[in-house]
Image (cartoon, rainbow, N blue to C red; front, side):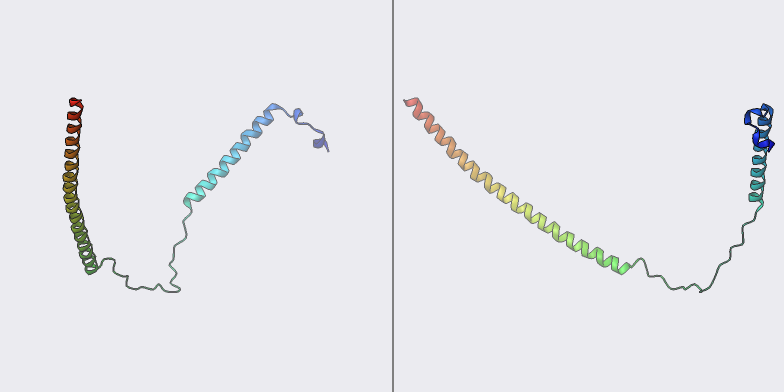
Length: 125
């Protein structure tokens, strides 16, 4: 009954200092014991359970030389075909370009002749 009537202000300052030091000492001691126990503890032995036993089978081949050669030949054949088509298109474009240049040249020559005639008519007036 006497403790229930006491207030915290009635306790001396040295008591709180001693209480905190004792509390930190107990916590440090517990941490030291747990650390020593964790460091000295040996892990349990690992045992492989063969129940059911592992199944072994041959893995499929990852590299098939014949298939790689076949694919390489197919790609080479297709690229050669594309190269031939591209070359044919360039040849066609070059011949059409020459024809267009000749046609435009003839038109420009006709325009120059017409401009010369107009200029001559203007000078005569």
